[in-house]
Length: 262
Image 1: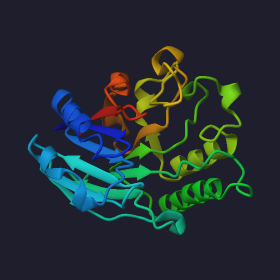
Image 2: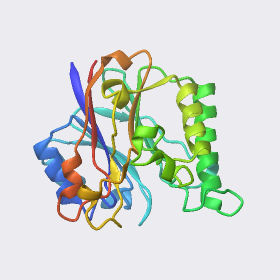
Image 3: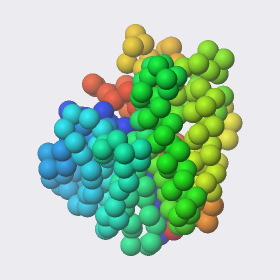
């Protein structure tokens, strides 16, 4: 039975609960993974989402920062979370559907503004987080799994508006791209979005700083949908809902979708 999954850094689920409702009504993914919820779990407006058919939610939260949640029409079992790099942050949760597919929802640290771990502790934390993700996948290689989330790295040259101008900008530096690549390789993860859309510029994030984000179009593809090699051929119909970036009081991220025939 096919199911459609979406991932979205919502940048405050309580502030933007109306936008989550709009997405659920208009696009109706079977599963929606949210990042940067910025809310304790008990204050996430789960009842609003349940009223739209999303009666299942698993989440990890903290006040004002981070936070991940999975909203689902389908029954889903909470199968835990990991605190990579020992940050004490709510950045990962995993759920298992009744068909045996495990969904990992990640919010990788952004890494601050300076791409130097000596000068910027946050950048070091980001690299350490990715290293521990890599080691985890090496030690416990995932199967029949999907990994989604705001990974805060745009790995390919066509995942950013200007490869040359962003080489020294956090999210596209060679060391970050290398760390993400090692993490992907360790789990034999397949980038489903690029499997479906192999060529051309593709973005899921546009800065709030741009006066006209749409016209300037200086985006980056920070949000990803991966699947393990054993089920990657089941993934299709990938798309990024760019229009959501233009909704009223939007997140600076757009939702990314994929469908799996599993």
